[in-house]
Image (cartoon, rainbow, N blue to C red; front, top):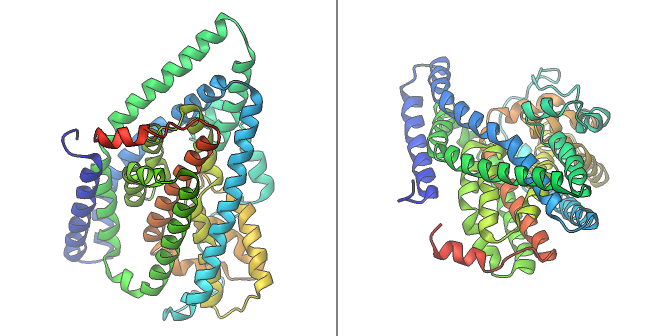
Length: 421
């Protein structure tokens, strides 16, 4: 792993996964057999993702508490929080608007020559508990241990904020001991992260192989216009995010993107934001972002700044309307955009969260929830792109906020690249 770059190993894993998946798909006598073969690949993926989930909770807790305890005063925490949330809101609106624009211009729903699911068809997505009341109450943990066990990032974040402020307000030897222990926890977890990430190429290989074994490449041809339109929208969103990042970071944005290459590939190949989280933290540190900024802003971003997922939701919801030939006025689409803006903040930690959000808001606008069935089959391919975009969005957001706060070492990224780290 040290002799060859980690990104190279991950790329090799992706290529081998595509080859293995293609061979297995062609050799499988039927769909059931293909799913059975894919299940064996998925064992490796599940083990890798479990290892990732194992380190997420202590990593978030340790970095966030250490960051708050290390800040000079409580006002700086509030200022950083306001700046972060302001950035997240603007980025979310931009992402939603782009999704709405592309689906209207390309009219991808009208180009899909597939039989439509019955209006009452069961999507098998649990949307009953997805509402504002339950989301708000769910944010606050009833037990920190339970939140850690379930990797509830928002709940861990809330407890960590209280714990960090409590620790920062205490003076004396006991506070120094606890602070040193938390700092030690962070160092240990970063080392554990390094060990876990050595299995990344294997996890990537298995994840890609499982998807291709079941889906093959034929499904990509059927949904070519939908997939092409969505990825064209993501490419435009990438360009906008990079352009905005350039305004604040200048040439540093290109150094940041090179450093984020590995977590982006991890996110794309596994379609898991959690898989990319530890490596994103590590690469932001190499870029020169102070750990206290990363520890505070990045967990917030994972709950409130999912740019790729936001764009997907607008794209998918309006696609369903087009597929069923339901005309929506600009005012209705704008209202949907604002509803998605609010409701999507509860998707962190929800299985197939973006799909669930879309399925939940469709009935609000008299659109058939069954339309989700049209895209469930290719959701993995969509998830790969939107998850990679989330990593880019959060990496840029964290770096820009660090620059605003004067907590960015602008030479660190160049040194990291020069040393071939």
